[in-house]
Image 1 (cartoon, rainbow, N blue to C red):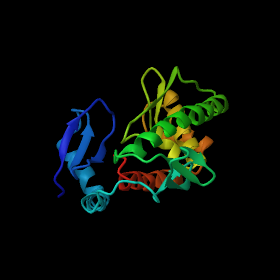
Image 2 (image 1 turned 90 degrees about the vertical axis):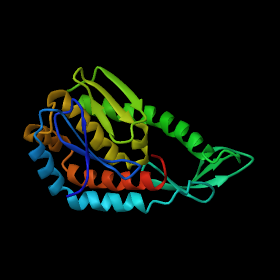
Image 3 (image 1 turned 30 degrees about the vertical axis):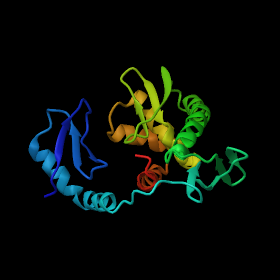
Amino acid sequence: MVDYEIKYTNRKTLAIYITKEARVEVRCNKRVRKADIERFICEKEKWINEKLELMRNRKSVLIGNGSKILYLGKEYEIVVSESKEGMYDDKFFVHPSSDKRYVYIVLEKFYKQKAKEIIAERLHKYEQIMGLYSTKFGITSANTRWGSCSGKNSINFTWKLVMADIDVIDYVVVHEIAHIKEKNHGKNFWNLVGKYYPNYKSARVYLRNLSVRIQQDNWI
């Protein structure tokens, strides 16, 4: 069986996380039995080994001039330029810098700004459609969660979500709004998500692949 560590949280479901150091973490609450954890690990063993192999073979190459970045599902080429900075046509321009992570700093600022605008608009749209309303909206820098909904119906999204296609952003928005009514991931929850986003299974696969791309690009 795969070696793993248990990290106790207040979450209601079991979850597996692969850390940057290629360690396996199981996150769950203290009421979960060890036997259930081990059964869960066995069920996910193939996926875990694939992720571990990816992390171990990951190259420590930072994105830079000529690299491709994602924004709303489309790739843009990074160009180092003295004259301008920002997105123009199919390229993203950045000024030269001795700081190896300067491109990340500029891009993160850009992504955060766009996330606030785009996700806020999508959230408002689907709140109206679904008749469910959040109490607060925020953008975070979370690495392991695309979105979250608190017990008080405060909804947050990671800014990394704007790397995804707008249609997939809609799925995450619908997912979190659905948690206003259904606080777990039971049958009623997925029925509600499916009512407003029927292709949610495809969106989940897309997000898993995007998560791999984000790791490969050394964002986390």
